[in-house]
Length: 500
Image 1 (cartoon, one colour):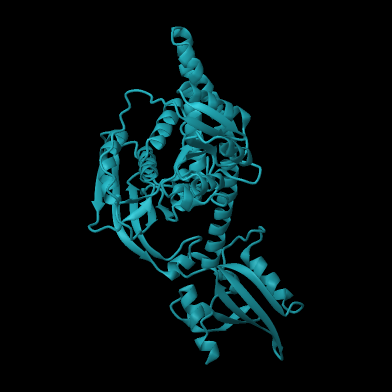
Image 2: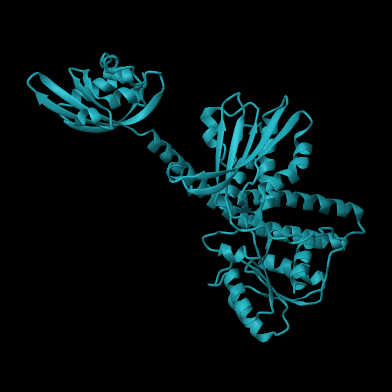
């Protein structure tokens, strides 16, 4: 009874051939009945070639021969089902001597799910390692770009009469801004960007960006939307979600050179514990499902698992950085969501974005105007706190050029000493990452507790969630990402100073 009702397949081998099996073995291998299975040799149920180069029959015969010296063995094997598909198993083999020779008792366990989880875990670990590397590089590079762009803007302001010099400076500024865009992508992939999450209606967001998608994709690609009614709200950074959809759409366009259809769908979905157990870093719960699919050339099966890797691309040399899908992956993961890719070579590709549901309501912030006629200036006193000397100098120079009185400090401790000696400071402009035992966030907390009327702006080229309090950053605090330009700096400072 135990033999026949075991959930694991059990097969008995004598003289190198199957002589008995239970129903679980028949079901697992997909044979019509027990008799058909028992007519096969153990090696016949395995692919012809194993990783070490020997045929499956040679390997099987070696295992059977060694059973006398190794009465108990456990090893992994690949098996073929009756329909020709393969799957990995873990085999437990026990040799039992008898009057008529050796009887081998084998138990097989399908380990397909375990192998898939191991593969996903390795991929996840690789992405984390690469993300740390990319985030560190982006942080240092953003500091350099802040200095380069700031100095160029100061030079540009002093040389407007020389038209030829102005053109050279503008070309350098444009190159610096392209470098800044690249570091933003690195930070997005590495999940180290500062997000500004808001309660978002994904349906409304898709409707708003549809005209932009039409302009970006061209006339030979149709856009079809299937937006479900009563879709739940999600709390994510809407601008980053727009970028994610645009990235997916541009990739789809490149895969549909002769034209085709891009479909965007939304719906509500609940992921249960069973699903979460089969996916790395997925939490069971309610999600807003955003699906972006195309009718393009598809992605070959052998490279589908690599599409989220940074710098991986199937495009020709010089066409793209290979960061498009990796920054989508990073944004979704940083937003506590989940993304899956499905594709068949020649049959299009589908990306599914699972965005966590929120019970919060959308805030009515009122209409705002983004038009800026002039760069705002001021006369208030600002304390700049930055450990990088060159970055601190350029921040002081830019703010001074805007009319502000500027004091500066290299550490949080120096900043506290200056605050104690000066009662006329109106704003603290502090880097987040600083040595000396006090980060910019800790300095900001101290300021809010001891100087409640003093405004704070935090700035960084890197946001490591292990170091920074994401709740603090996402609770309405002003954060200015490096590298910043003079106009962006001026407007952020003015906005914060003018807050009630």
